[in-house]
Image (cartoon, rainbow, N blue to C red):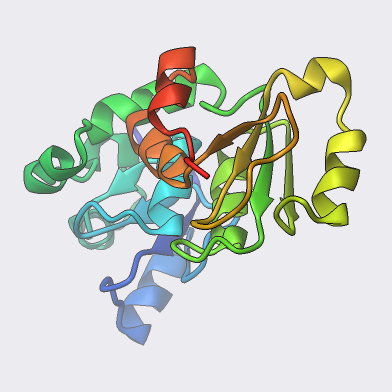
Length: 217
């Protein structure tokens, strides 16, 4: 399946653990392990499909999501293997969330991000997941601009809307929390599910897709 890269920065999802000795062995091969997501992450290790911020960020930007056996195989071989040949296979999880991980990663790596060209205003009241995680997912999906704001009719939201150019407003989405009031006229309001499903399934944001996730006020 081809040779591997010279170095890797690997993030671990919850439930995946490594002994200190294994981390050191991997570091000697050129694999740096971290717990959190970051823009420099080049592979994510997961035992199953999860709708966590780390998992969604990886899929959103086409970073390979690999099975934990990938790290064991690298250690055994004494070199960095090609992560593309060790993509996680979780048919139950993929059925549950209605997507193919391999297909979504392929689309994301070649498509520039499903939020490319879009501006997102995210309600500070979002809790499941929190607004900060929704912003992180949006940035990983190549959103043009992401702002976390107090929901309308706050001055915070009004200021952000005023500063949005007319052309940009046509591709601006307000991600609303339950109970949020309707945003300014002309601003689409959607539920956080759009970002979660959109990242996993690598959706194209057509009018029908946006309508499906419209937030009812």
